[in-house]
Length: 239
Image (cartoon, rainbow, N blue to C red; front, side):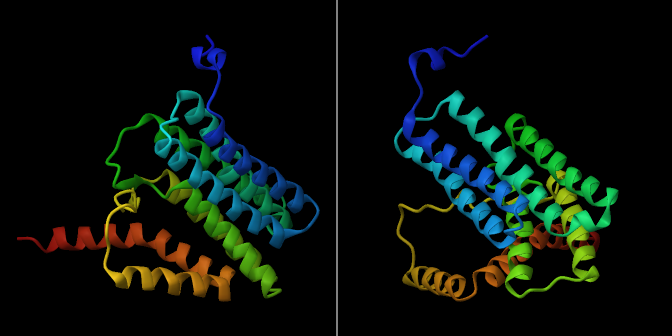
């Protein structure tokens, strides 16, 4: 049965941002097919920015809707599931033959499962259950961007690509908790040092975006397992 909302119209502004994210993902796929891998990786990050804005714009303008939520989820599947998988496959995993495309499919399937769980399972909003799809896509894309920028490509790099994609897929469907940063209040007052740190971060990204982004998302991807290990260690030490 069709949603009544589609008959009465849809909210334009937030869905424009979602469409921009979807367009970026499609452009990335085309760039990957043409061998423009650095461009393809950068465009995925642009799509990530648009995707991050659509929900915030909807909340700020009070234009949330079921249609927008479904459209956003379908767009996420392309932006964070299909585009990064095809990027890494076209760039390196294709050299592994059947194993390569199976690994790429594993990542895409993990994104689909992660999105389905996110849409149906209610959890503490302060944390993600499993590595988020945007973070996994950013990790893979930043890796390609970094290697392309430094013209690093070898059998070792190909094997690291495979390991990185498999680990990212496993982390996405795991139950490991990751901090979501949704508690950050952008409207409230913060110490001046926070603004200084943001400025330093922007300068670092501008100076060497591929390296800084890759290191940042590696740290975030490791934060979940490290925190889980620390919690288990503390629990074992209790009498």
